Every structure is written in structure tokens, then in C-alpha cells.
Figure 1: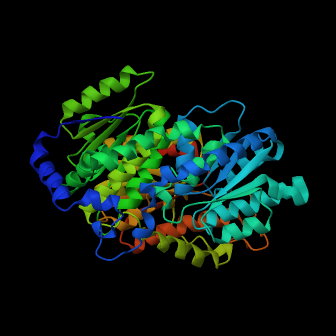
Figure 2 (figure 1 turned 45 degrees about the vertical axis):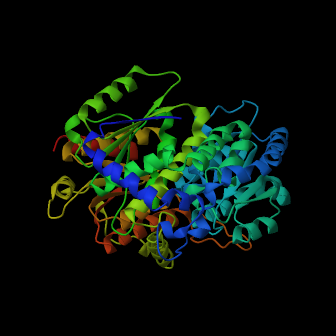
Figure 3 (figure 1 turned 90 degrees about the horizontal axis):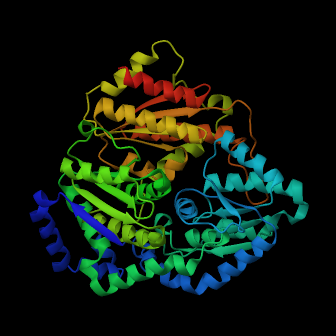
Length: 552
């Protein structure tokens, strides 16, 4: 793995002092020994979350079994694996499926991490006619989105296959969870147990990441080679490990005010960006601190970048694009701290481990516990409260209508108002996932960043609740949040199953409740939020918003 550092001369003294501190306090040795006191004096859900340090080694015992199961699934005629999961249960499998070459004879992977009724309906249409296997993935076994999707698709498959529907489902969950019990009662084809000592966002190289990879024909032995080398290097070189240097750099520069990490990634690596986004944001965004990941595939003009930026540039070694080489030269000349990764797909497992270690080391410098998520429960609690109300009472008049008179003025006022310090803008998109919509959202963020000279990020809801949502409510409170909600009129009911009651009447109700709950949670935390209702044609409306920003 090749990592190069640029433009760090001005911080050399600080970085040397930070490296000396790691050695004097034996921080890296203590991490290797799974010593919780590296981060906190009290063992606050730390010791029970350090299994990622040796997960690739433990996974060796399961490789043959996973490949045998994958071969059986392939021979049974399954054409598609539909993974139902959120956050750490879905981001790593999606990354692996998009970066590594799938063998043609194996099923392809579809990740469903949304409660948007439009998106659920679209996937459901494809699973009516094509032989599909549903992989229900939840560490806790109680994830509301995952269980709602399970209820819906199990009901669909039962209509197709009758009492044999369970044979079209597998589960990945920790031992003893409600999902494990439910999967057994419903006659799932297979239940794969996760490792209880590995947290969700650190689970890329555990069953949650590797079992889905095996099902689509990825060679796990080859995949883990890079991780094996990286772990061996960690155990023998300790303080000189690439992950330690990366974490030291991120943590040290964060303390100097550089808390925005701009991930410059070609479109082919965007899924890796989403994985990195969750790892960094959910691990560090707490106690008034945090590392804000900013994913960019098309860099902004120089004047859009402030002095609070660190740049991480991923440059594919194979099929090198002159565009990315020019960007490397350009960002080096800007004199911002820059970390340059030369990337090959075969090294993806090594990158997973290196970044996990880096975030753990950065967490030491930020003086936070990187393994908990203390502010996530607030939105879950508010969602449950809202779902107790009748659906027609669910949506109070908190939304600004995109088509309303005076929208432009209120929107502009929200963006330029300077009564509080603003360091970034986040677009919270409770919208139906779509490739064209992603282009529109990228464009909106670009227009916002260039107009306000602030970093702008976006992600889909409810997926971001399992990713950047912790940082939104746990950092210093210097963000502005543009909440967008699209409501589909046609109702998509959520059926109940024995042992799994529907949390809401429909996906429409659940989707809206999750949006409202998080928007209320942000306001309760004192965050500045503008909630906007998108009434029709989301792609067109988001492009219109971008044009509105451009013309301000």
C-alpha cells in the first residue's frame, strides 16, 4: 500500500510531538493489547468493541464454509442477492461488490438501505420475476428499517413460494439477537453469526462484509491477503504502521483546526467514500468534536476551500486518468495538507484495516471513544413517539414548501444568515435514490460550496442516520442542515410477521416519521435546520434548487 504525504512542513513540530507522545505512552502497544484506557478512564463500551484488530485472522476458519455455501446458492439458480441492511451492515459489502470484479456466473448484489416507498417498490418489482436471495443483515437484530424490509419481502416471497419462502432468506446477526430467533422460526436457509466484539462500522472484514462478498463469487483468500500483510506489519512495526501515521496526522491536525477531510475520489470509488464517511463521522463526531468527511469526485475552485481542510486523494494505479494526476499536482500547489493513496482493488482489505486503525488512533488525540454512538438513540426515540400518532397527524407544518410563494427569500436568508458561526452545510435527502438524483445532489452541493465557501455534504435518509447522523448531533454544532422530504402518495403497507410486528402502517409513514424525528432531534440539539418539502419530480426540483443558489 503506497501512501504519500504532502504539504506538512508547517506542522512538522506538532506531528513530531504527537509521534513522541504515542511512543512515550505506549499508545499503539496498548491498542494492540486491547487496552480500553487508551481512550477513556472508564470502560465505556470499548473493550467489547476491539475485535476488529484480529477479525481477518479469525475469519480464516470460515472461508471454506462460505465458499461452499456460495457455490450451493449459485447452483440453485439464484440470480440476485438483495441485502437488507443499514450502515455497517451494508456499506462494506456494497464497496466490495463495486470495486472487485464479480464472476459472471455468480449472483449480483443489490443493497437496499432505504425505507423510501418508491425505492422499496422498485426493488420489489424486480424480485417478483427474478430468482432472488434476501440477505437480512443487522448486528443488533432490531434495526427497524431492516426488519420492516424483511416483513415486506418475506410476505412477497411467501405469495410466490408458499411455506418454502424461508429458503430464499439468510441472516447475518450477532448470537442471541431477536433476528436470530425470528430467522430460525421462519425457516431461513442459513443464519450466519457475527462477532459480538466488533462494532458495525468496524465490521468490514467480519461476516457482515465477507459473507455477502463470498455469495457473489469474490475469492476471500485473495481478498484478505492485503489485510494479512497490514496486520503483520502492525504487530511487528507498531509505531511505523501506515494506519498509525494516518491517524496521528488526522488527529494532530484536527487539534489545529483542520477538522474537514475532503475525500477526492473518482466515481468508481464513491462507495468506498461512503464507507470512509461512516467510519470517520460516526466514530469521531461526539463530545463537541469530530472529523467531517467531505466526498468530492469533481474538485471545486481554489477559493472554495478554507484553511480547515485536509485532502485525501485516491488515485487508481490501473487505468490511470490524467485528470486525477493533474488534480494531485493542483492540490499540492495549494499548500493544503494532502494524503495521496495509490489504490489497487486487490488491496481493499488492507485499506479497510488501515483506516480502522487510523480512526482509532485519531480518536485518542480527539479524547473521545471512537466505538460508541451516544446521540443516535435520540432520533430512534423520536421516531417511535411519532409512529404512535395517527398518520394524518404525523406531519406538522414545519416544512417550507418548495413551490410556496416566498420560498426563494427564506432559502437565501437561511444560507447567508450569519448569526452563528457556520463551518459546513449538510443536505439531508429523504428522497428516492436514483442515479440522476445523485448528479443533481452533487450539483446542488457544488453550487452551495462555491457560493458560501463552505464544505457541503449530502446523503440519503434514512441511510445517513446510521452514518453521519451521529456527527450532526454530536459535533460542535457549527453546521447548517437542509432537510429535503419527498412523499409518495401511493401507500406501501408494511405487513406484520409472527414475532415481528410492523413498526408503522406503511413505508410512507415510517419514512416520513424518520425524517421528522431527525429534524426534531437536530433542533433539540440547537442545530440550524431548514426543512423543505419536495412535492414532485425530485431530480428536476433539486436541479432548480442548484440554479437558485447559483443565481443568488
